[in-house]
Length: 245
Image (cartoon, rainbow, N blue to C red; front, side, top):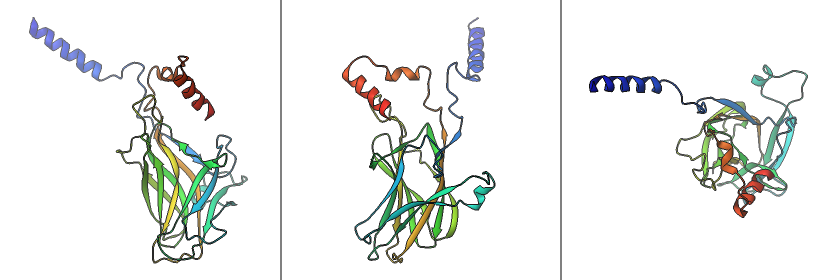
């Protein structure tokens, strides 16, 4: 009798293991989210872009602007009658060395960090190289507040190149605490010069900045209850911060 109960229990366990639990989010669902295509048509993009540089930058630089252009590879998936733009930056330095330039989002005149959704797997963007031996990094801030430098290779090529940067698994993208940051954020692009490379006249462009993510990875049954307003000061301030985003 006992042997029959053990066999039945094992069979039942095997059956339940093969089916997902009710109300469990499909964490493997992957989607692509556009951060900015720089065309200026997306109403959800409520930030602008700015640029800064290290101490030996020439007066009047760096300069940032948008231009009507796009990579040829993207023309096949866009409408010919639409106007498409890219963002570009130009910089000069007074001397060779460890110089750098950063391109970053800005809101209300202050640097703004763009929040990611879900569990981000890759960052994907197009960058235009001028065949200078400069190096491109992507800066992200994890859910513990630390900034990580993700290397995206060098820019010693001509014209457009599609760059895909994988997010390392050791980066904490979500806090386990309710009071912690809700997600990882994008801080900016950093371009660094090789100490022996020319620095008198450099330009770079970016287009179609997006990322792939398991957007439902951190959604669970009752997710909305974690930010309930209990009427205390902490809860009200947390709610106000969320409403202000």
